[in-house]
Length: 329
Image (tube, rainbow, N blue to C red):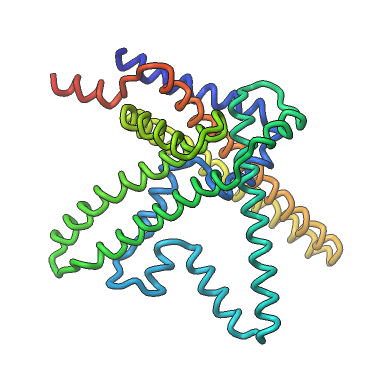
């Protein structure tokens, strides 16, 4: 396999992922819900997380907020709870836990259904097929894989945050070398965790494996093809970055149009018209974001599924290895 054939493999995977995404567009709302658990945009999430890291000398509230936005929400939530009386506090906690459990359950089921739909490619999927597949769902296995990814990723980010603050010096060059060394270790580890989890989910849904067998298969697959996974992650990063830019531009343009409409309604002096304009603006904005979230999640899941299928059946020589060999000649 030469460099052209290696790149052609990725092109075919991306093309097939686009075909599946467009063919299954009626399931984009479900995909947006599945994206609450994992969007599949692995490299994007890693870059965003590591760019926001700041050194921390100890694991305090500020450091926790840097590690994950979730901690910031938890801390704010805990402060509000302390203001409630005991009976109201207990009721509030029970209701909140119930709502969170239901949201997590719905998101996990949506993730399972989405991966099943993608495994069928561009074929038409009916609710009857989905109900039949749901008889074999293992929510605890799904939760275990997603929880494992979150916990390991949080640990890596947390240790990185602390490590960055351990050897802070007055020498800018030494600080830069230390930071580069830490990121050189942390970024690949976080990348492996996210890829490993994504491939585990694909195997779990497609082949209905036990956790042990699934992890063993994915470990073997990554051991032989980790560089190919890295290359696909980079390609998806570029695609996700470009599409995010397009989404941002579209939202800006719509915000300008909505602002003009609101100014017209304000000039007319009709509160009913202003309310209608505001409601429609929020509705259309939410719809645009929902469509994008569903489409990009379906696309990312499809790309990883196609890569998993390809590497399971065929040999693949990474493009980076081809390029390095040519440079070293």
